[in-house]
Length: 341
Image (cartoon, rainbow, N blue to C red; front, side, top):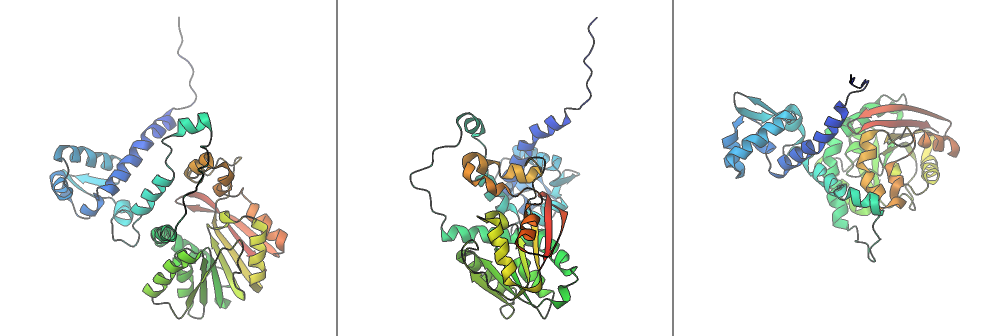
């Protein structure tokens, strides 16, 4: 008599992987059709279809799919945004992340994954498309909402709890992008001033935000490439949020930071990738960088550092102490390293 096989694990994870592309397609289509803009207040499917110019019956099915993913709430046939959709998917909100998600999808699409695995990386084009100044500005402006959506608040909480915080007078936000993290920290200390350092087109975006937030008298910008250009000096705090992966030589950048700090100064490296399990975790960081690694193996360093690598570099260049811990973020577990000169 045949016996059923003994099964000690569940295939639930396979089902979740199977439906994940459907979930992301629903999300991206909702952003494209501006569905979430319509649903700050409850509406019927017919009302939504009329507002966005779509087929009423299929709109209802589509909205049910969004409700299944918990991006919408449905009650008595009426739909409205869930708290997450309301916070992050309504255009015009300072925490709107729709443009960022669309950008990341286009940058990290794996529609040709089978081909890449079979054939390897595609041949390099004879002429590589230039990453234009306008593209840099566009990306920086898009990432500003990500900083406002939680990153700046997290960084401020970390820095404000440092015992040295009350004594800080001048800080550098290295690779600071649109500058909202650095501005949040400076704004919390009336006696502090700050510098946003990034590529010249990017600091143009930071300038606009500095003006918008009325901080022209306390914030300035410095344009350059930290791999080769001076970053200034006389800082009590240097902040590096998710930017050290762009270092061509991590020790040289960390030494540059060390030299730029006053004695007793603090280097806070926040949101480091901190890869573990032979560079296969955290899952969101590894998977979001997969297409880069497949298309351009020479850029695989952009996946991030092994856990502890940044802290080791800090000690190698002369910092007297380094304190590290895991930081939980929407992108998974990251590293926080606090080094003292």
